[in-house]
Length: 243
Image 1 (cartoon, helix red, strand yellow):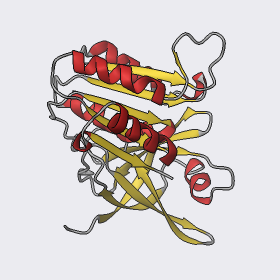
Image 2 (image 1 turned 90 degrees about the horizontal axis):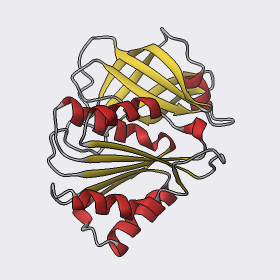
Image 3 (image 1 turned 120 degrees about the vertical axis):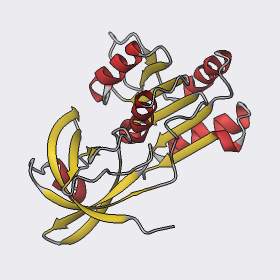
Image 4 (image 1 turned 60 degrees about the vertical axis):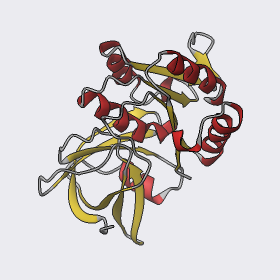
């Protein structure tokens, strides 16, 4: 397997996705495609005063042949890497290494998919979903996002609009600390996986696959639920943790 490529990229846009999450859009300086598979990540090389460090972030954008790629960075208190990136001005240039990773889903996969992510764990799942839609895939797909509050719902408006425009796409959110006014799902994502998988199964489009991304504790809990309680075969359960 060839070594991942090192390339220069410029920050072309930035926005707040949630109170503590910054969305960053980079573009390759050479104009070549990023070349990632949906779900892969890149390493950013950060030239800090104390020395160069690298930080890995999943690509949130579609695998569409573009030189542009989106990332979501959570600002961590005292975090050198996240603080540097969240304060990075548009026009700044960095080196990146990648794409890399095996947590992927083919855009044209015919299998129904339940995509489960918490916090910025939604980013590779967003890439999977956008890539499938761009490829015209008719496979049923449901993305379940778990966050604490209404304000923490990354990409919520965009994902809701995507679901409204495509009958095979569904977007669900569950909140662990909802306000009294919240009328949607509540609790951890684990509480909703069984029902959503059953609904995908009932759609009759094939055996569903499960893709889960987030902190290790959540990923482990969902994988064990799927395999030990729901009986999903190992080859249909895919996970990636970022802690």
